[in-house]
Structure formats: structure tokens, C-alpha cells
Length: 320
Image 1 (spheres, rainbow, N blue to C red):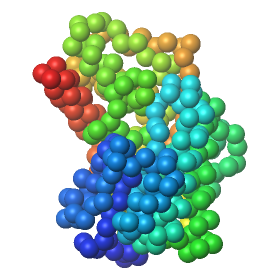
Image 2 (image 1 turned 90 degrees about the vertical axis):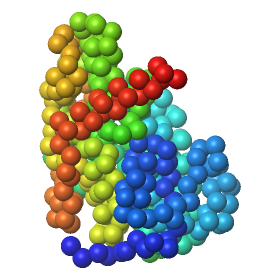
Image 3 (image 1 turned 180 degrees about the vertical axis):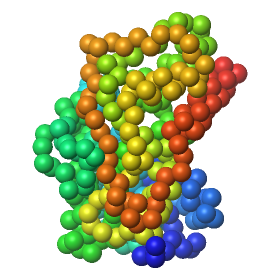
Image 4 (image 1 turned 120 degrees about the vertical axis):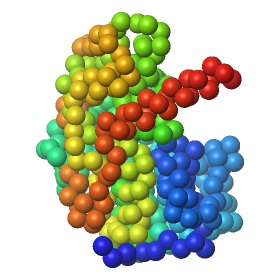
């Protein structure tokens, strides 16, 4: 597939949220390709909710490449309990970054969203055209509304002003630098933590939310980062594009896979009084694959990596 844009060594690269799971993976991906001209700022160094601070940063640094991986994120519990914060904070962060990237002439911009933008009762697999055709899943509505606003802002700035921005909507991501705090974590990392902890503590049961019947699609964050860089160079349409593995698994099967890989031989105790979320959430990735990108990391391999990384974190914290 012919490139529509080339990331050059001399271009300044700003990855917003570079300390997070997705942002750090993007930085690793770009460094692996030989790029080194980064202008990165931690949350302490640059508050992305401070409009004047963001404006001053863009005015001073004028980054050529901007990848917006900054967001307030969390699992079903955090999303459900803090809808106001998930809506407000994400709107402010993305509005600041998108607008200043436009004002200060970024050569290429990438906005990252989430598969939760699609309706709760969305036909499966979820095509890009299904956006805004039905009501959202209530448990993460605040976050979803913010991400819909973000992708539309990029689309409108692209169409109206010629802003070179694209939007990518990944499926459920997991992997290196994931969060294992049960109040904030997503489903796969939460299952890894609960299962590994049960093994380490000699417990015979792992308490899990819901029925386990919900179907989900997972993509390792290293594959997501590779897709982001690939799409920056091979995609330039105002319309957002789905990024995923195209493969789905029940939460029950995922929990069983994690138990097997972690060496847990006890019981998975499902609490059916807790919500499952959307019954099924699989993305149609035909547009992505048509552009020439295919993920490489299988779910089994990714789970093994994540278990090993969580165990390494536990060893490090116990030593420290």
C-alpha cells in the first residue's frame, strides 16, 4: 500500500499521554523505527486540561506529528460511577489538543477513541457506518459521548479547514504498561490480577463480575501502536476507522484462558448480580485490513506476556 504521508526524522513528535499504556506503546513503536525527535510532557509538566498551558506548549514547540493518546480511562466500575468526570475531563483534554494542533499547523494528527462509541444494540460486527444509530451502553455513556465528540471534531476540522487529522477507534486494548488497579482497570488486566493473586495467595476461588457470557474483542497494545503508526502514513480520510483483531471471545473463555496460563486450578466464581455491559462488541475491521494492516499478536501470546509483566511488577514492588 502506497504511503499518503511520511513521518520524517526531523519532524517533532508529540504523543499526548506518553506515560499511559497506549501512549508508551506508540513511543516504543516509533523509537523502534528509528525516530527520536520527541517533545514529551508528563502530567506534572503539562496539564492537558489547562487551555492556556496547552496553547503555550504548542506555540513554543510547534510539533509536526501529534498523537492524542491522553484520556481519563477506566473499566466498567470507574466509568459507571464517574460519568461526569469521564465526560468533562475527556472533552476538555481532547478539545485543547485538537484545536491547538490545528492552530499551530501540525502536519499529521491522530485521535484515539474506543469501540464504546457504538450503540448498545449495535449490529455485529460493528461497522463504522453504525455510529449514532442507537442508544449507547449506559455504564460508559460519559466516556463514549466524549470520544464521539472528539472524532467529530477531527472530522469537521478536516472537512472545513483541511486539518490533516485522522481518528482511530480501537477495540479493547491490553498489554504492557496496563493498569492493574481494580477500581480503574479494564477487564483483561483485572482478570490477570485477580487470577495471579489467587495463585500466589493459595486461594481456591476467583470472584468475577457478571455471567461471563459477554463477547469481547481484544488487541494487544503493541499491535495497536503499530496500527496507529501505519495509519498515520497510509490513511488520510476525515471518517474514523476501526482498529481491532476481528476476533471475539466470551469473558468466561478469557477467564479460563488466563487461569490456565497463570496455573490457577480453582473455581471461577461469577457474581451474576454485577453487570455484563454490552452483550457483544466486535468490530468490523475490513477497512483497516483493506489498507494493508493485520495484527500479529495472538490472544494467548498476549495473555502470557501480560501475566509475566504483572508478576514482574509484583516482584518489583515487594523488593521495593
